[in-house]
Length: 429
Image 1 (cartoon, one colour):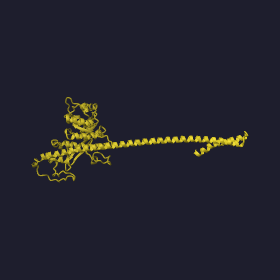
Image 2 (cartoon, rainbow, N blue to C red):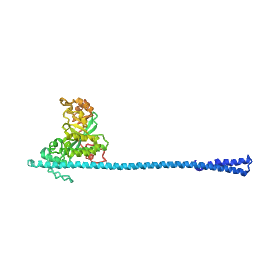
Image 3 (spheres, rainbow, N blue to C red):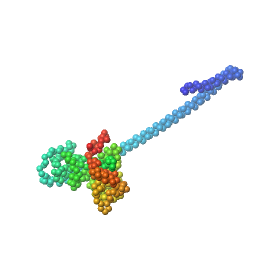
Image 4 (cartoon, one colour):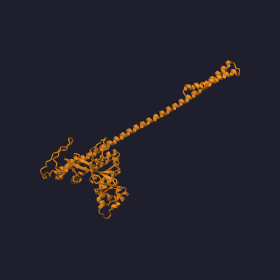
């Protein structure tokens, strides 16, 4: 009800009885009309005073309620301002922290790249030294087109390149060095699948070098001459960074797929590179859930104090390890688990046709033994459907090999920061 109508109703409540009182005093009690009118007026004034008092009380309550609401509103605004100030401070601290971490990652990556550049310079001197006496042995040059270096490269133009099968060791070494200098190191990914569903759960990163002509140099070709020349750490290191780039893309997609990345004993022993790499990984521990470092059984068995310290440094950062190239089933699964090994890769041939010596683990018991020690078994080099049927008899849950997918080169768009292409497949079609 509107306020004026309420006041009119209240006025009638005391005005009408006052008039009635004056009328009654005159007609029923015989009062003088003037005295009766005065009595009615007094009654009306008392009613008006009561009405005013009640109205003031109601108004005071309304004002008090509004003041309380305003006080609550002011307190809420004050809390909101305090929360906003806290969030601003938190955002400033977070921005400063992330900026600092990003700068530290960049600086650590720059130091690692400087180490790679230094190593390439050293291998260039080594290659020049061993290739000079070999010039007299080289026959007349094969007629091929000269390949010009990139416009922004300071690498001198190479001589017309022979095919790999026609190169001697010094020529092959020079070709490998040029491939490293001109960044012709490709990352190939081979899937690791679940069995029997054959769903891709992991990838293994494999390195391939390319000549000036685009001819692939396989590991079996370049390792023979690259190892004595000290180039293998450089190849390993570039492969590591390629894997890290892919893992970052996987992390952006919130993918749970992991990548196995091989590290040789040369890298673990590299006093220049490995400490810088550890420092770099300290700023990228978020990659630990996706990146799995892989070592051969020979490297694991032959690990000395330096290699063990390198593994411990990576394990302390939360990175998991895998042992591959297993040639015999004589190993201590508990010791591997203690050193943070969570995967063991055994070839299908070793599982199905391997010979056993005293102390070897039988293939039928391998899966369960590894499982009890928190290690997953992966049967690799699977090439025939018959092998799949046979290894499934051993309750194997993970497989890798050409039967499930050949190694495919990673697309360049994956290695670049292109936010518009998150749905592209990792490997080239």
